[in-house]
Image (cartoon, rainbow, N blue to C red; front, side, top):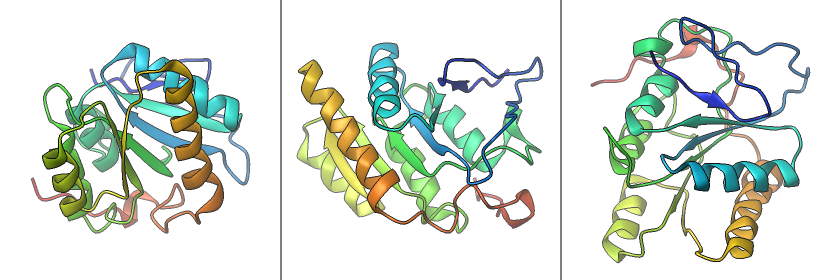
Length: 185
């Protein structure tokens, strides 16, 4: 069963693996899809985003395959109609099943998700990784700091910029499944 954890204090995953949201604000909270396999980094990102913006709901995919399934409503997420589209994807590179570069490529190759803001947040300091991410159309590449305070501040800055200062992309949580274009894979 596909499972995306929603780290806003409760896990809202039904037996079928579908996520249900109830009581969303009319203007809507901010939705961030965090694609991260390290539970410690997940907890830190969640803590930083929620301390910056209490209306931030962090959906977590623990591998690239799960992220692709959620974004394109395939596999266990096929047929989701009322689920939010993320306002921002925070993507690790080194992931199980499907790597971050492949996730980024699929996001950029699909007309429905091509404008989705994607920030790579990775421990990699390899210039080749940075170059490849920008060639594939990443919006930003941020190396994960090793220091706790710097890590938290980096995530807050990412959140402040992409959820506060910039305008939401037209793909945002307002798209219906009828507007969704099937991916070519």
